[in-house]
Amino acid sequence: MNISENLLIALLSLMGTCAGSFGGIYASSKLTSFRLKKLEEKVDKHNQFAEKIPVIKEQIKVINHRIEDIENSIFKQEK
Image (cartoon, rainbow, N blue to C red; front, side):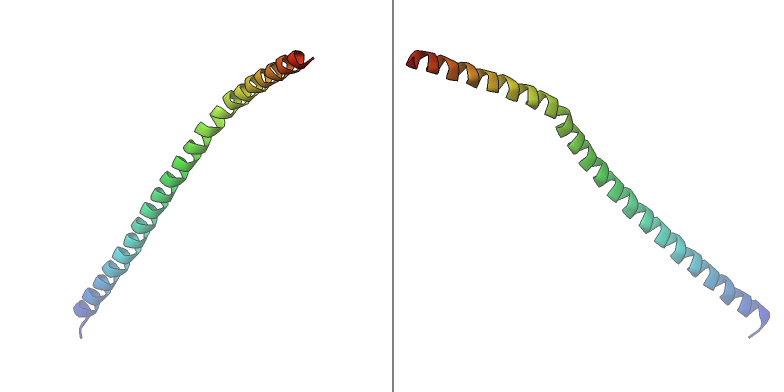
């Protein structure tokens, strides 16, 4: 083997190593992006629910007042 053959083998090895490294980086990047997207969807879903909580609390207060009014009217009728 002469120098040019050794150089060719070295260059091919370098190209293979670079291709493998960049392929791994690309695959890892795609997986990270996918997982971030799914996490963002979960956070959005949670935030939408969290925005509804004050409304639900207010509705519960109204319902409790209505129940009290009904109970008071029933107790007044019994007396």
